[in-house]
Image (cartoon, rainbow, N blue to C red; front, side, top):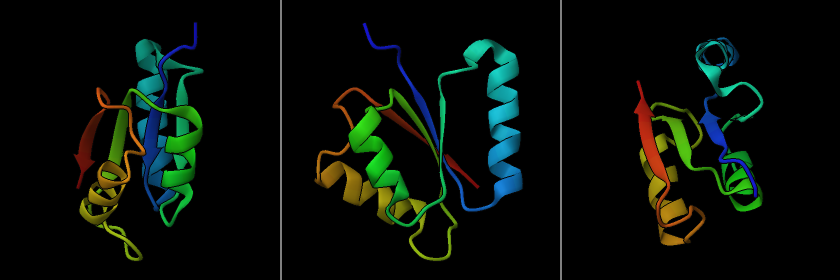
Length: 87
């Protein structure tokens, strides 16, 4: 069985590492994927089908709201995956 993954979509490397640190120390180590915006988020969603996605809504190239709409419309996420916006 494939373990559920958590995807962090964040263009700021410090913020993504901070999120990764908090999740790792909370017992999710080894289940965390990082994406840096652009189409990296779509690629990782298609490849890993994360159960949970933390996404920055204020990214310069494509904000998290637009990215989430595109990913949902294209059925990139599993139907039961959850998205949480980061500000």
